[in-house]
Length: 119
Image 1 (cartoon, rainbow, N blue to C red):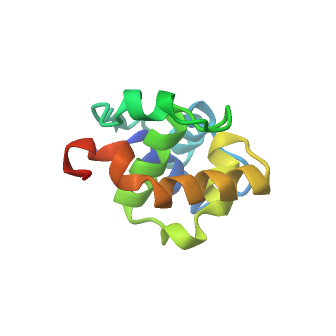
Image 2: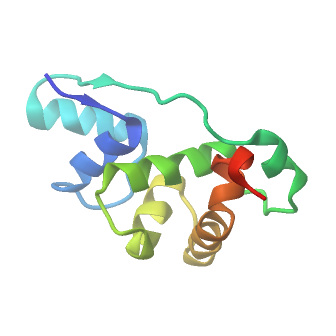
């Protein structure tokens, strides 16, 4: 039996289903396709909440959204430069919001995830 992160599960199910997927829907579709419910590995929170809250980010730039971005990157399912459709589907964002979120993720990556290494 495989173990997935939430992002990994959504990525796996996206291989054979089209349309917007969120975690609960992906879990049900996975069970239908494979016949069992996989174990979900919830990664620990690695986001510097103080930095994120101190920024003037739009309301859709949340800890959950940034966690999804990190999981998506680590899953290796997609090159992050082509991740906009994944972001739109998983986080229910319009294209402009998904592009802005990706831009923030790329520009502030070190400050968000590794504040101790930031000069």
